[in-house]
Length: 480
Ligand SMILES: [Zn+2]
Ligand SMILES: [Zn+2]
Image (tube, rainbow, N blue to C red; front, side):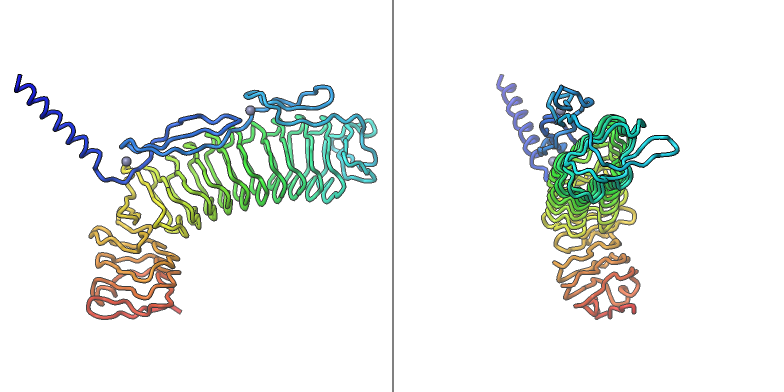
């Protein structure tokens, strides 16, 4: 009996010792397991949790996803659009009983149809386009038809129309536009610089839209994109006032500069069909705070999120294997950067302008190509400092023999640098732009320093003219 109790106590002691030592094992969390806590719907955002294998987790908010809209319905006095998922009426347009007169038309000799060519003598504020002209169908709003028109408020397009031409409404005063489900093509810049347009519902009949469709639209608040869209083209929303947006399920690609300089954009929901985000796609979206990149994404373009100064955390999906240059340039609020197990290339300028003393790089231990020593990001084979540490110290670990290109580029916070003896290669631009450096020391001899490979503009110094070695000074040669 006594023995049994003894064993029990022993077991308890061992267990609790094990448990507490487990709990106290110091490690850097790598929150690489994602779980949905509350799924997002078309009316409300959801929550996901990122977990470390130790059990610690962090909760993130996700943006609401897209409404799934049926076709326009005629309810007697209005056309309405209703979401088939949540039942909300998302759009409504009055039915007008007159047709505008005085518009100009152009006959398309090929198809024997008419396009609207311009406002002509029409003075209506609400322009109701007729479905026929001279007994022939009107099938297109011509290129530049209402460009620069200053007195139109609304445009009602009949369902004979299948195409809206390039720059059709560019820089016009239009506030509302009714686009029926017959339209299958919208040209480049169709609504660009429409500074009074606040809402745009694009019908599901569209399989593609033109470039720069809403570029520079400074009053746009609500946009519903068509369900079948697979590409969001170049500059689609660039310089616009869009605040939140859901990209439809099925979208595969966001092209270059699609949201560049959308200073008001706070919330965006990316579908889990998305694979590619182009260069500068979200550059200078200064209000964007949260962004959850879906697991389907495999390519992130150059400077894709540069200048997103409010972005607080970002995850690199598992399919992305390289981080291109300046991808998070000047994202000065980034606190957490979740890297993945498969990354095999990280450009030294990826995190330029980020305060690394406050930002945490999290990298799963399964990653075979990178590891962290303190806040230095090290690439393997040969072991290279890819991103220098927050305090400017270079690890003295003997395996680490290189400083990568741009490892400490533009680090104006640094005043002193000590280069360990093991370093035999200093990459291009490694210390360029470090304008406040007052000393560079090298822990080997002058003779050893002279054998160190120095990349192009490794230092473009102002303050330092020689490297302090263990047995004297070596002049820094500046190439003319
Ligand atoms: Zn952990
Ligand atoms: Zn809905």
